[in-house]
Image 1 (cartoon, rainbow, N blue to C red):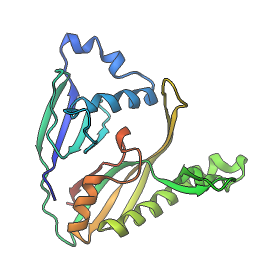
Image 2: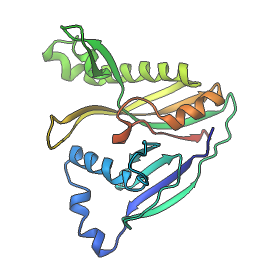
Image 3: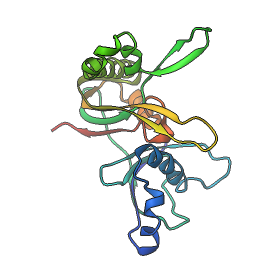
Length: 225
C-alpha cells in the first residue's frame, strides 16, 4: 500500500480568518458540509485535473480529520495543520475500536426500471406504515447499519464484533443551480477484528460507502485496550 497521511486541520485563529468564519462555517449543517467540501479541496488541489485522494470528517470542535495519499498544503493560509504518516501495523486477530460516519446506500429500480439509490434506513422505512415510522426509525437504523457494515467487513478484511448506531439523520446540501443533494448519514461506533490486513488497509484508505467528498467514509481506528 502507498504511503498515507493522517492530518488534523483547523481554521487559523487570526483576525482575518475569523472574519470569514461565518462564511466558511455557516450554521446550517447542510450548507456547512457543502462549503467544507470545497474548503478541504483547497489543501489538495495542486492541479486542475487532480482526482480526490483523501477522506475527511469534521469533529465536534469544527476541526477536520483527513486521511490522504499526500500531506495537505495551505497555499491560501487558511489552516492550522498537524500531519503525520499513517502506518498502522496490523495483524490478523487484532481487535480495533472504530468510529465511522457513513452514507450507506442500496440501489433499487424505480417504476420505470431505472436504477435509483436510496439510503439504507429510508429503504427499510418504506415498508413501514407512515404512522409507525417515527417509532421504528431507531430500530431499523440499528439493524440496517449493522447489516451493512457486516457486509462491508466481509469484502474488506474485517469482522464486525460490536456496533452502536450513535445517530442517524438526513442532510440536504444546497446547490445553486440544481436540487439539493440529500444524504442519509449514519454515525457508527464499535469493535472490529482484523481478518486480512492486506485487504483491510487498502479498504481503509479508499473509505466505506458513498458521499466521501462530503465528509463520509473515513473509518477512524485504534487498538482495543
